[in-house]
Image 1 (cartoon, rainbow, N blue to C red):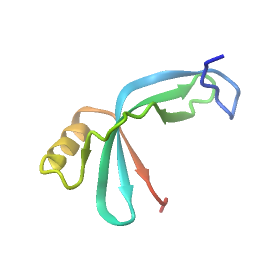
Image 2: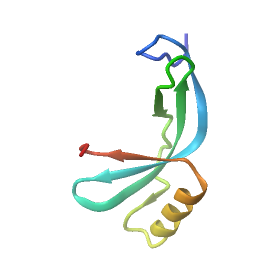
Image 3: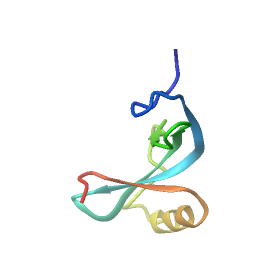
Length: 88
């Protein structure tokens, strides 16, 4: 079996959105740190969501000159998910 199964309601999950942008935040860097591409999966039963299938390398990192433009375009045109190293 190679299914993604919801731990909450035991139903199969499905790929809701491919190519979401995950905005990684780190305690050591103010603001967004890295951008990743991944896939958003959801549960047919309870609508729980999980982000899986991350790319091997980040889409962009905070020190790159084009980072702000890539982040702005992602927020405007794509589904974005924030990921915090330590939740607030």
